[in-house]
Image (cartoon, rainbow, N blue to C red; front, top):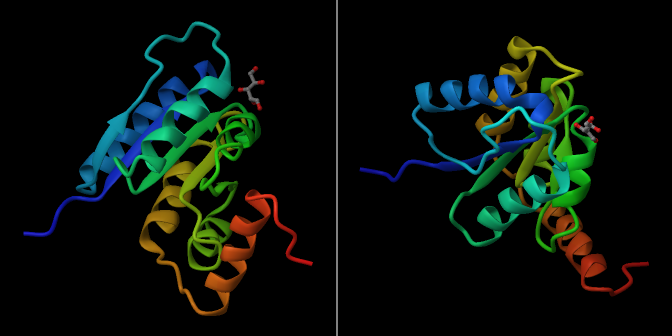
Length: 154
Ligand code: RB5
């Protein structure tokens, strides 16, 4: 039997309910979920949650990550500071799909103040259903890694 794909989830205080809905959806779809919190609705700083989820992905303990804050921006900016993370903010399903196919995104972010539950789940589904296409896209993603390593690609 093939192993379940593992997804790490996180958010800040703005997105506790939406994160719970995403987790329930992922589990219903048969994914294994590692949720790194937070559990409380008390105000908290999104960078630490972005980092926690990113480290799970980088360690190979989850193939993909989903991070939610008010807009999706703060938590994605934080996650993207870790080398090897390609976290995209998506507010609709089309870019979520293309971010996997072309950019090999390994984390998805969105905003609980931007999208409702139904749209969020559609975004999640497109992200998870898509696969990296490789080829010319792999060359471009490798160029991003070069930039990350401090080398010019110009
Ligand atoms: C919290 O108020 C808010 O700033 C945060 O959730 C996020 O939107 C930041 O980018």
